[in-house]
Image 1 (cartoon, protein in one colour):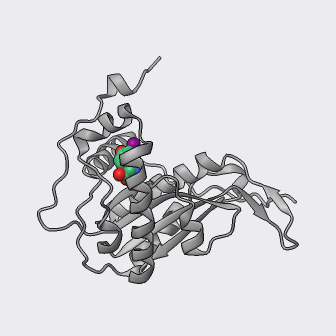
Image 2 (cartoon, rainbow, N blue to C red):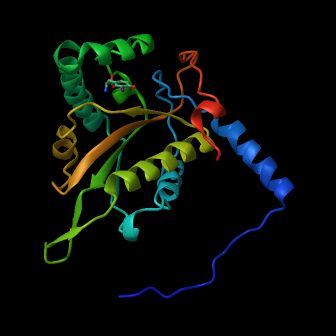
Length: 220
Ligand code: IYR
């Protein structure tokens, strides 16, 4: 098999314009915050669909697109997820988490209680397809699955922010209960739960800093 090659659709901007666009994009994404206080206000499904389409444009291993997004709107399913996640989280906070991990989390004030899993209008559960299955059910390898799904998730989070929504990356561990509740096959592994919606009125976020450019980047 080989692809047809077609001309690249590339939009060239002046360098002045590129500087302005890059600055404006940074200004916009630096306003994104991870939010834990969600409103139950409804959000049109089309926004979520568009953001998932944006996520699906991510560069990925051999264009095999090793991801699947399950969008949960059903209150019953959200409740099942909350119950199962809080069970794992209680184990984590009370037993499994090493002290250094708990100390790193302490400033954020997180705990095993996850009411947002029922309050927010959407839970987008991202699955990584460890391997694919062809029509006859034979295994077909996927490549760079973690990297591909990570990039797609980053685009999804950015697209949601750009659309005017907030999100929370939630990672109950282990999360295999999600395959069961959401009826996903065993060649897919839950990657993370993205809680999506509007912030609660008066939502608060920790006053954190981001590392500066000279710490984050080296130019040689
Ligand atoms: N999954 C747990 C713990 C947790 C871990 C990290 I690293 C965080 O940045 C935040 C939370 C939870 O969701 O509470």
